[in-house]
Length: 220
Length: 220
DNA sequence: AGGCGCTTGTGCACACTTTCACAAAGCCGT
DNA sequence: ACGGCTTTGTGAAAGTGTGCACAAGCGCCT
Image (cartoon, rainbow over all chains, first blue to last red; front, side):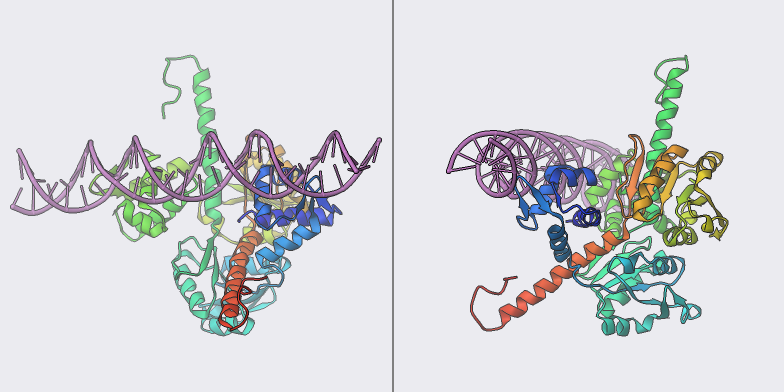
């Protein structure tokens, strides 16, 4: 389930704060979701709650981590050392959360050798060697859109089985490879859509408030 | 619909490549989805297709842009000039896609005045002034998790009505404010989950292949 | 030891999404 | 001008996810 990481996040915070026990109701409020959904999601892990009491926070954190495979670190390799690649690598968030950057590669000769976030940029031809030497399973695509498919092909050829794609393009991969796409522009466009609707609504009410012929308020 | 930006992306690429007309089937293949879904989604915009022919790419791009409110630029303001804020601001992707960075603010005095991606970092107290002077509707939270709620409150107080939250925390906002959350760690954890399942599957088949007592292959 | 109050785990109904299937409609060749 | 081919737009079916409601179970208090 895609919500387990969110619960993990919330539970970890609560654990830090000294909370040892939590009910589905409290967890639901924290996550802004329905309590029944929380219980259904958690019951997927097994029956780890105690009726009348709730869930043991620490135990639940451990169980979710186990389910998500977070009991050890996963090194990732970044393809593309442009703006986005540099940003992702320089941003320390990956390593903090158990996904240290195990390598960065690019095709451009002038980028190779430079050090970003403590990792040296190497040529994409060395990708397979990097992946195998560190037993890397996850690759991150941080190339421009048109190069994304090539990057994906190179990652798959190198032996990576999961891909996180930040490039604004859909990539095709063989069966058995997990791909997730994060497009910052898409997120902004969705917000823009909401803003647009808000603006239209304001316009409509404004027109309606003005005295005049009827039936024209909603005209575009 | 959350899929319109994806269609827009695909259609723009096709338009660049000189394609003037496209069928729902082709568009579906490009996007890796079902053709009927594409038609339903597009019919939401109106009946802009021609039976027996398909859709006019340029016209469709225009219509989607209009629906998404992308007929003009939307300035955004970034709260938090740490690693993540710097990465987002330095990464030129926002501006390229019609969302130029209109300001960056932070609470830390030592960050104020530095220039990132061509924009000077200012104090968070100036947020309202920045938002109003540039008529900014969208705010980006790039703070550490614990500061995210404060950032959201400040953005809402300043008059922002849409929030893109990159911080690993759920923020509460008044009714009528649109919030979207992007957590890079969550994406990686979902991939980790798939890797974990793959590893478990490999383990199970290995155990099953070894001669021995039955019924122990899947034991954890 | 027994009852009471609280919380989990889950069957069921409902709502929403996705997919199928096909009639309506447009283009093209004859 | 007409018939056949292609593709849209959409009703209906199948599938998925969500939320309610409640029985089962646990701890605590008397």
